[in-house]
Every structure is written in structure tokens, then in C-alpha cells.
Length: 551
Image 1 (tube, rainbow, N blue to C red):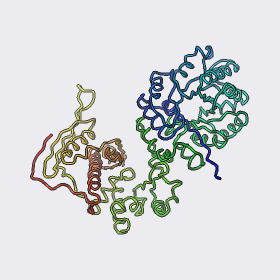
Image 2 (image 1 turned 90 degrees about the vertical axis):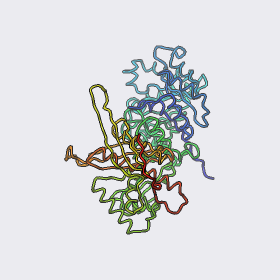
Image 3 (image 1 turned 135 degrees about the horizontal axis):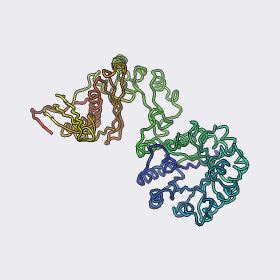
Image 4 (image 1 turned 120 degrees about the vertical axis):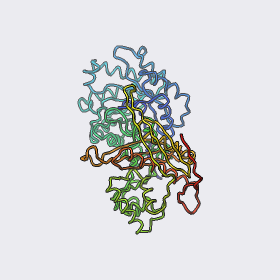
């Protein structure tokens, strides 16, 4: 009979420790939305914050009680009582109970340096502060997690005293003692050694809370679990103070797929990538492309030899199936990817996978464009259009007459005014529009969508979500060519895609990338609507008699 995998409790502190990261700020609604996603994922404990620290955290605990969480339990976080107060008169202790959570997490001093130099109390007083605080919350019916702050530094400096702080928490009724690598400077070997020592001395279950200052937060968490810890604390995407916390997405994937432990709810692992990107969006941060398991580049292949091998045997260059964590394989298009990369990327969609002469032609076109400064790794929509044009499977949706960008900076306004004048022909109709915006690119996008909307309503679904500019040949100074990349989101299909434009004129480069994004949307929307029609060729509507529209 096969033994059931050991379950590791995942304790998420994105809503508390994560918000201590630079440029991370969450509204009450943000916190509630993330909490709901964490519950869907199957996280066991959601730490909501410190109820005494600010009204928003106190409001979170009130609001979360009205949500029907299916799996997760909520924890309120706080510190041990003050050195000059009893627990009954300590505002922090009272706030923890008033939060009315099933779990209370209390952090206390473990390093004798902190006791002497920060708290400035005798060691015995610190031990009483720990015991009183844990006992007070446990007596009120709460499950108490004791976070041993700076444990690994404290144990290295004075193991006897550090262990006594843990014993004080255990004897007072702590349900779990979490060993914290607060400075994030420990190595996995030390973490494993100290966890084993504590496990031999205590009977209470152990947890691990690590920071990433040495780049080892996940490795240290896994080392602690191998040594006997049964709870892992971290944040989604590793957001947090300084270099961040342990990334709970990486911990969960490694525990389940590499170490055979049970985590999350059934199907939760397949939602890791979705949850990761959702949190990035909520905190208004760009996803880390090379983030393990959930990053956009985690299963991206560029070298021709790699792509060829993956097409034959996927696990030859992939350590897991990308779908196991809700991610997907990507082939990065470049001169290095060769014909195999083009076949993998466009072979099925454009039916060229088995035509070697066509693949070579497309590769030559790609190499010629890259020689001009184009890069298609993050501009797959532009590459698809390049292939369609090379294969004769492209027809324009409109014909440009002209555009003109005007920027006015006057002493009377704090910001420059920008407007874009656009004239083009669509189905025999002249569209002539003027739009303003936050800069020429924004104005250009507004004018183009305004002109196309009456003919192609689906352009309303396209949203620009990122814009980057890079100088290609900086030695040319002001005459240098620039490469513009734009990332779009299709609100109808939820697809995210990128385009690229190159020119000596930054506005022209932006126009090229913008047009590619709109055309990619229109071509694919029409092909999708035409399926299962046999000829997936994008064709504009029949030309009408000449008319002029102005806006």
C-alpha cells in the first residue's frame, strides 16, 4: 500500500510581509481580491496584516469574515506584548483578539543581540513577554503560530538562549513555531542543521520563513522542510522587503513536483501561473519573465538545436510539463532559432511546417529584418505579420494617407499638449481624425482606433499595456535608430501579444508597432469568426463608393 504524501502547510504573507516591498501598496479591495485568489489556489493560511498598524488592516479582518473561504484560514499578525504592559492592557494583544481570526501569529525576539540592544530588557523579561503573549491568545481559543524572528542568526550567536525562547512559546501553548531567517543571509546547510536541532529539542510542529537577501530563500525553505518543517511561509512572486521573501509559487511547485509533498487543492498547481500574473497586475508590477515555473520565459526556447529537440522529445529541454503549473511552451523567434523555430511557431497556423523551402525563405526574411534592428522574441505578432507578407497571405485593412504629430509646450501649462492628425482610407471611406493623448503614441492610438471603430468594432478590445524604447546604434547620437516594442492585451480573448517597430524617428517606429498590433487583432478575429472556413486569409471588406468621414 502506497503511503499518502506528507502535506505541507502553505502560509501566505503577501498581504502583510509582501506589502513591505518597495513600490508595493494594496488597497482594501486589492487585499480582498488577492485573498479570494489564494483561497481558490488552495493556500492553507492567509496572513491578512497587523490589525493595530492601520485602519485598512483592521477593516480587512472585518470584511474577510463576510467572505466564504472554502479552504484557507485567516491569520492576524502581531508582536509580543510590550515590555511595560500586561497582556490584558496591551493594545496589540487586544487588537489580535478583536480581529477574530482562527489563527494568530506572534513574532518575538530570538536573538540575544536584539533583546539587549533593541528591546533593552533582561533575557528573562523577553521570555516572559513571549510566554504571556502566546498563552493569552491560546487561552482565547486561537491557534497560535509563534514566529521566531532572526532565529538563525540568534541560534548561531547563542543557541542556548535562542532555544529557550522557543521552549517558552511551546510551553505557553503555541501550535506551530516558525523559524525565521529574517536577514536572509543563511545557507541551506545551516538551515537544515538548525532545524534538525530544534526538531530534536521540541515537540511542536515547525515552520520556516525565509528572505532572499542571499538569493537562497526558496532553497532554504526546501532545506528546512527536508529537515522536518511542516509549514512554509512566503509570498506570491516573492515580493517583500529588500530582496523579497521566499516565492510561494516556486516553493509549491518544487514541493509537489520535485519532492512528492502534498500542497494546495486538487487543480491548484495548474493555477499557479494565473495567480502569479494576477498578483503582478494587482500590485501594478511587471512580471519577471525568467521567474521559475510561472515566468513567461520559464519554458521559452530560442536556440535552433533546442527547438528541434523539444519538437521531438519535449522533456529533452524541459524539466516539467509547462501545463503542470498552468504555463505554456514558447518558441522565441530569432536568427538563432533557425527553421525549426519557425516551424514550431508558425508551422501549424500558416501550414508551412513541412515545406522546407518556405521555412528557409521565412528564415531569410527574419534574418534580414534582424539585421535592420528588429527583434521578434517579444514581438510574435509582428513576426506573424512578417510571415504572412512574405507568403503573400496579407492584405491591408486600410490605406494611410498621412499622419502628423503636434506637440506644444507653453509657459501656461504644466504639461505639453499633444495631438495626432490622421487621415486614411477604409473601404473607400476617408477617415480624418484629430486626437489628443498623454504623448504622441497615446494620441496616435486614440486616433487610429477612432478611425477604424465604425468599420472594425473589435479594435475596441485592444489595449496597450506596455511600451518600451531602445536605441539600437547609440554612437549615431541624435541620428540613431530606435526600436519600439509594444505589449497589447486583447480584452475579448485575454491574449497578450507584442509587436516591434524600428526607425530613426521614434514616432514612426511607434506607428509601425502600433499598426502591427491592430492588424494582428483584426486578422485573427476574422479567422476565428470564419472557422471552420477553409481559407483563413484576412481580406478587407468590399470597397464602397468614396465618402469622407471627419472626427
